Amino acid sequence: MKNVLKKLGSMVITLFAVSFLGFAAFAVIPGDPAVMRLKTNATPAAVEALRHSMGLDRPFIVRYFDWLKDFFVGDMGVSYTYSRPVMSVIGSKMPVTLYLAVLSFIIMTAVSLPMAVYCAKNDGGRADRFISGVNQVLMSVPSFFAGILISYVFGIVLRVFVPGGYVSFSDDPGGFIYYMIFPAVAVALPKIAVCVRLLKSSIMSESGKDYVRTAYSRGERGTTVLYRHVFWNALIPAVTFYAMQFVDLIAGSIITEQVFNIPGVGRILMTSIEGRDYPVVLAILMFVAAAAVIGDTVSDLSAMALDPRIRE
Amino acid sequence: MKKLMKNKSFRAGLVITGVMVFLAIAGPFITPWDPEEMNRGLKFSGVSLSHIMGCDNFGRDIFSRVLYGLRTTMIVAVGTVFIGCAGGVIIGSLTGYFGGIFDTVVMRINDVLFAFPAVLIALVFVSLFGSSDVILIVALGVAFIPSFARMVRSEFLRNRSLDYVAAARLQGAGNFRIIFFHILPNAWPVLLQSVIIGFNNAVLAEAGMSFLGIGVQPPAASLGRMLSEAQSYIRVAPGYALFPGLVIILMVLGLGLMSRASYE
Image (cartoon, rainbow over all chains, first blue to last red; front, side):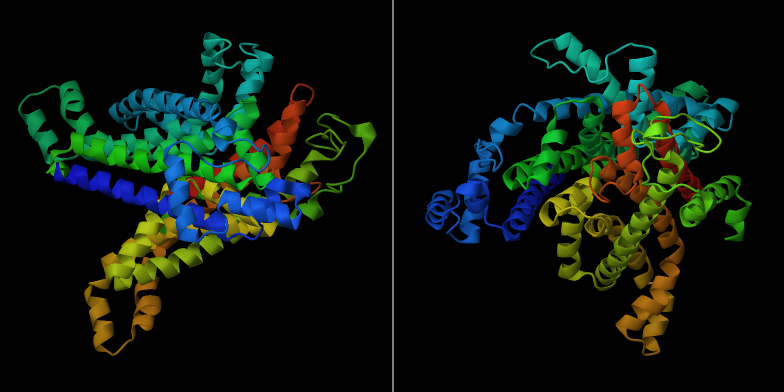
């Protein structure tokens, strides 16, 4: 329990540190946000008035805490490009990206767990060598190229779906879920390969331990030993690793969205970076950071749940 | 090193990587075509003897563009790994060697950065400083520092209490000398592994960034940008997307095979 609280505490501190670093990075860059927002109407008087109403004439620390306070109630400032609250610009796009990342996480886990167990069972066999060879290649495929290949094969050759034919969830929930499977597979594909390798080697090193020999010598069957003892112990390092992949899946989703024409945060992030729309960039950054830090904590906590030795 | 050469997958990786490096360096002497020369008559012309990968939407020779893109990717990857490795060695050796509050604070920040995908850190960098190839290299390099720092630090933690360090100190060696001439050479094998993986990730990161339109600007060729352009023409010219993609895969595969072997 003490360790759980410690982990949660360090998560909160890290989130603060990230938000401060992010805010500071965007505060020290040259260029006056007031001028950027006014664009061509930037007369000195108007700039001064806007600076005051935006609070830019106050000290940095005060601005930081104000920004943080507003952030918690969902007010992330105003986009320079759209002159609308950042929340209304990215609010509808966050869930799409998150859904894509979660779906690819589910696919990654659902495919890699049985595959790793299968490979470990047949270690060194023909099937194992074949899978590990294929995995080595899959590991080298960037998710966006996997996306291009998938949309070519399934979209243009096999015509199972329409590339670029994204429909929003509110228009057609079934169509949305169906369409998202293809980009999710593209994002998950390279990660499946990495996960299979890690989990397999974890199972292999676990099977060499003394307690496994003991279990065998008690007369337990191979499958019982594998599923009751080895698998769960091998899962402990794997859980941390799987959770770490989630952030990469978000990054992969952001890039792969471009291939499948999905209106997630990817496109808005790119246009905001080009247009130097800092409030939007900062907000998206904060979301990914939160996902990263929370994912990290969840992985630590689930490792604790699995392993009494680190639970205390 | 001799042991590594006996490993089949290491040799395969070395051959693939060697061919890729050769193609990148010797590119201009291999292809007779200018990668930026447009020829309307050749628009989307398929694979032929003179244009072995066909031509793109402007009638430019895809093979030449792939070679130039390969070269760009390698330059960015080398720069990225160099910055990441140098920064990581400095931070990792100092924190690992001295420890204390300095170590705690720096590694805390390091862990936070490590939690981010490198591509995203680089994107933030680009949004702050603008998009050019130099900034891309610096951005990716900085984004790669945390992973190197972590690795170097753990090597220093392991080594600093060993006898040979104590012996060096008794002989009167200063901290600087111990760090760079005693411990660092011992960290070399592990560092080499991370450098190979670093290259691997840097190639993928560069491809991803240029796919998003960051880095080398058109008309200069880059593999990621070729892929993003090829997407619009995939119905007419699937080869336009296929070849640059395959080259990225081969490059990453070669490095991946090498790093896998070095772990075994």
